[in-house]
Amino acid sequence: MAIRKIITTENPILRQKAKKVHHFDASLQKLTDDMFETMHVSNGVGLAAPQIALSIRVFVAEYEDRKVVIFNPEIIKAEGEEIGTEGCLSIPGYVGENIRRAAKITVKGQDVRGKNIRVTAEGWFARIMQHEIDHLDGILFIDRLDSPEDLKEVGEDDEGYLEDDGEIVLAE
Ligand SMILES: [Zn+2]
Image (cartoon, rainbow, N blue to C red):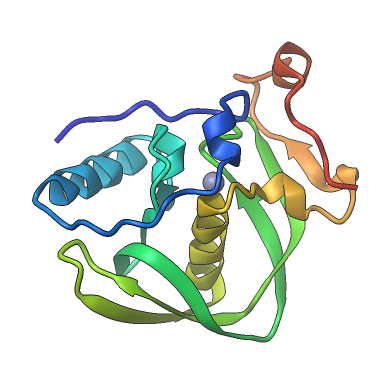
């Protein structure tokens, strides 16, 4: 396994619509192993391929007793609404508050071998999956803020991030 570099908002790959995966081979097992390892060392709960500069439709997520890898994910059912706080490994030093997500979703897609799968989740795990699926369409949590005041700085490591890169644009 290997740790991949996580890209941040100044990299335009994060804003691209990722391509569907049609060809399933052994390289994908290695890729998803790397994605889990990269996510773990970064203390994340989800990681989408565009975050490691690969514009293809796959994400991994792991939280408590749930662990999934979903290629070509599509939300086929969404119920209810919850608001919550989200961070993103590609937007270090910030969290977004009051972000609306469906409370319960069912996602269909394929596993690492291309077999069709369906995953249902609610609450926090449903939120993680919606956040990761957004990445595959070039959407970041900062696009889902109702108000710029909902973007909060956390920690001291990344002070000055906004001035330095200027790429964070709030959807107002
Ligand atoms: Zn993210």
